[in-house]
Length: 222
Image 1 (tube, helix red, strand yellow):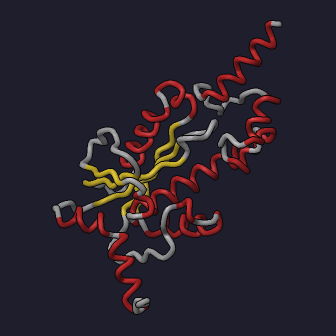
Image 2 (cartoon, one colour):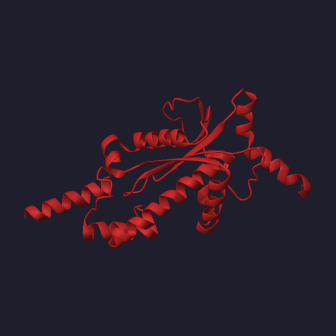
Image 3 (tube, one colour):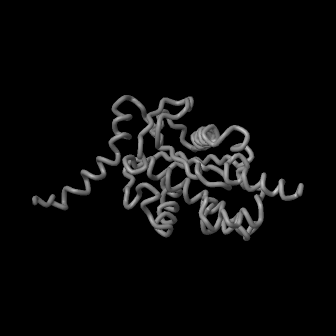
């Protein structure tokens, strides 16, 4: 089996992870940003989106899909991205999620992230399936957080930002274990829900939370 010469391997990887950014530039766009979200699935807490513009000459290092990195690595990348890139964050809380549904809340967070970016992008690379109109020309990329440097960076910012929010929430509601599961529907979280009922940051429109709340009300009526 032919082993690639390592002297040429890294440049090709860098070129590949910037393929979508470079392609947008060749089409005439000047400021290309990646957008990703964290927290669509949890039973509690906000959904968070991040928008990141990568500057020229930025070294990718280990930046990739946040799910492929350890917590320590994500924190390291978060600090570097925040210091060297243009970053915008959008946060939509559980009350709004319950009011407009999680999909629309995710789009709202994405729009806010783009609006909060200190450098206004003229083209967006968005992780996942086709998104709603963002008011800016955009391209959706399935598994984009592993294919685009900008989206990968955004996934790290969104994930770490949300994890920090849930770690703080754990101090106010320690009975639920938010610092460990970050609001996802783990067995421990579901047991805590059944034992304590829902707290103010739970998403009442999500089935497990709604069912537990209903059961608590029925119990009170007996």
